[in-house]
Image 1 (spheres, one colour):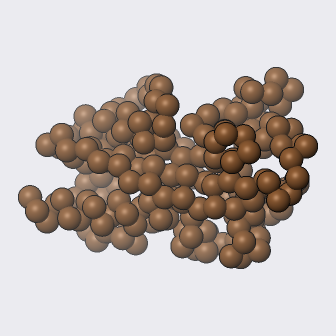
Image 2 (image 1 turned 90 degrees about the vertical axis):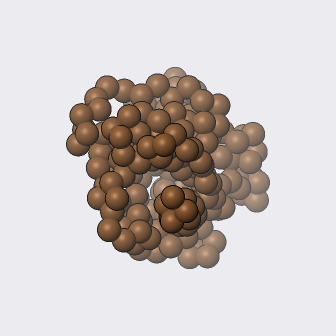
Length: 205
């Protein structure tokens, strides 16, 4: 079974690849570049699910199963921001510099500067969209709830991981091992749901 991942984020691809290989036997995971699909994909959806399907449809043009994830951080007191704009949140704060992890984190800290610790709650969200060669589409969703710290802790992970404190480990996602993160993360939860759904659909063909 060949699956094309609609992503060029190397860290995300590796994380997804590791999780998928744990859940589904006998699969070959390809990137967009592997199947000759180039160029940027415009993510103009208003939800994680919409964006995931937009990207998965592009991957499915290869003739194989196309999948994509759209993920980000949703902070309760900010009305769900950064949300679908998590990767480019720095644009909300002109002082934050580049639209990279550092700029995004600095913007988040600034917007939460007057929020008390007990109200700095939120969730990492991951939606996975899948498009089969016959046109069948579905999405699944995973969430991991935590709190947003006032300063960075840890050097691992990516994105908002150094600020995202997970109570079960009493550490941020940047302080735990990749295996620990995969077991509890929004992406790990979504991948398990995706694998279950995909296996059901393939077996019923």
